[in-house]
Image (tube, rainbow, N blue to C red):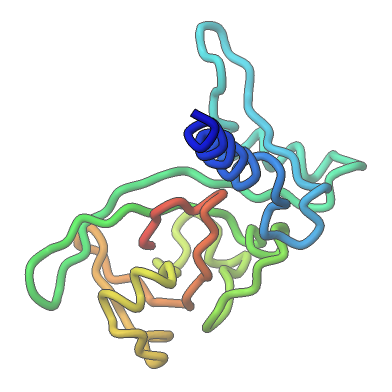
Length: 167
């Protein structure tokens, strides 16, 4: 009985430590906040791009704003098409989080505009699996949902915000 209780307590502590107590893997995690919009009948609504733009331009307390939206795409080209999960994000998101790309560079303001060039970052795990960790992937073209995207770089896996995202 004592061994079972000790094992259960250890398992619960390990889970609580990993999820609640260990600091986030970002520069200055104590300065990060997550913001949701409030709408009737929606507990956590996404923030619209115009609202986010207003917040960052008018705020005296925010040093930056990182926007994320989950997405799914079909990667085609070499071999069979593959369904990939990803995150749409704004320029400066990596800077806000203090996460420089593993390879390449982050998105620029010009690439963040409507009608800007189609670009992508690859998640580290996906890059290693799908492209064998080739460093020459930066600058190459991949096809997502039938549209060619230039690969800007590879981002380190961050379970707190990327989850299992591929691109």
